[in-house]
Image (cartoon, rainbow, N blue to C red; front, side, top):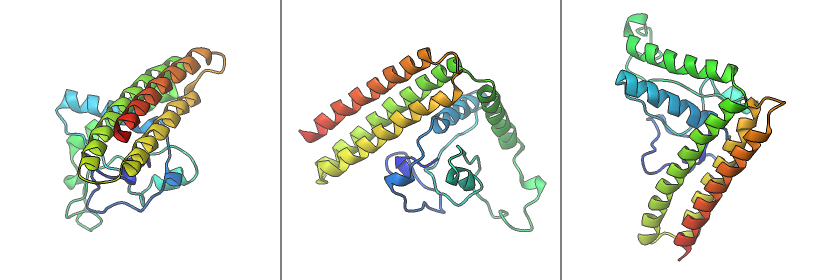
Length: 210
């Protein structure tokens, strides 16, 4: 789903050979699904010794209509080979290992979400919170290096603030899993996680402004 890496693609992030669409902050789709699925796929990758990578949102695929209608959606794929979209694209060209690992990770994730409640949401808050603090740390180091090379601090701070805002909203989106009769504990977890993100972002911004 579109996050700031689709606007500022740097560090470990990279687009596929197809490249990304030109996006703005208004195109962002903050939601927990991105980091929740990455977390589960990396777990499966570790167990199965299977390489898992991600790319920033590029648009133009089957999940885009869902996003256009504000329905969370992701694209699971293996980048193309010479058989893609040709009459040579047959079942014998499909990786059984990839299908197995994608199937396990996506099915386990879907079953968890379908049966999810406030306690499930609290677990996801922790996953997204950790992803947020890691991302902010990575972006801070990139921004610090960029400023030292002569780029304006204002533009680098804007990137950090974009990530902060995205993650504050992504964590808040976990309320769609909450049990109607049990929202207090989740609300508290959300506020605590958001406070951590805001505090970290404030500290990094202050460092960049020096």
